[in-house]
Image 1 (tube, rainbow, N blue to C red):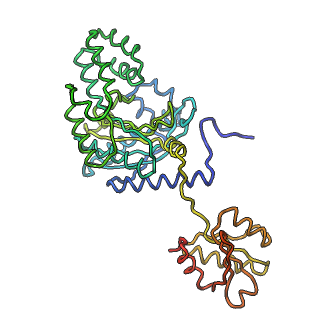
Image 2 (spheres, rainbow, N blue to C red):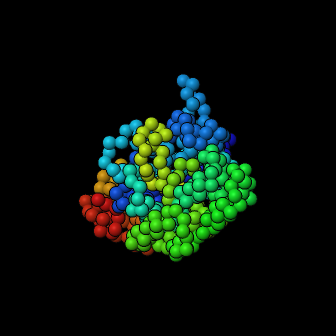
Image 3 (cartoon, rainbow, N blue to C red):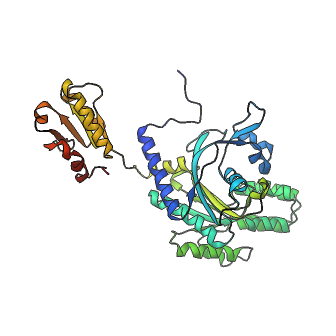
Length: 421
């Protein structure tokens, strides 16, 4: 038996209904904020991702040479492809450009709870603005998606990577050493971060100051006694979020994000119930377009881990509404089969979800099957009823039956709350 590759999944009908429901919800919410959907290729030139992070990142990606000898990789994330698309074709679009996307990404890493080699991201980018309003707009969208999805227990933590970058620069740290320090601080590996900072010949006082900044966390009021760079900017973002009715955002200057291209505001959304793998969303402000041959353009974006968000919702008991079959059509005899198929086709043409017996079961077994697929009603097509151009409609929940004229069936289902159009 051929198994699926490790780190991938198959999704059954119930799971796909959940996923499509949440996709639709996210798309709708992004649209209410004025964001429009785009799509980029699943594979890109490897250079798109190595140009900033270096060739070592290929170890974490599905990279290969195509038949023309070109270095190709399955996309490990979607921000870089979006910015490549912007530089290629969208620079003349009025700004700010507000776009969103959803799709699969691929990383070669050890699979674990909520983390897969093929995973899905929903994300948004606001391109062309650098101010508290644009940063707050992006954070507010991410928060509103969590709210609309019904997630109850989550935390929004907001920092500013520019604060630490400036402290390290002022301390004389060589630019090539900054990413390593930030990565260690991001993972709370303070001893390792101190070691690198000592190698960079930072003073003990400067090191203590940098580590101390990462421990500043709490309500917006924790900034009252903070005298560092970007305090006013952070407070401005917080005020706009408050005006936008975003629930209880927290300041956390230890939010660093592991990607080198972030320059300003950074934020994460965590779900404590998920334990160690608790982050469901991360983002911030950045400038990438100049790396891909474009002008310097500031942007703010985020990516939601779609799979981990579903896991978080399920831990809270979430169940997506199911699209039930409104009508299951049952011919009581072989002579009624074509009439049953015609009735099914008529209902479908009216936008009513209808299924029909294809297994040639008897009436009892068909009613049992209709119940198993949670059909709301069964339509029983028999010779006696057809004499008056009628059928029997059975409510599968109550067992009640009534005769309905075939010409009136579509209206009957609409009046009963079916999905007729």
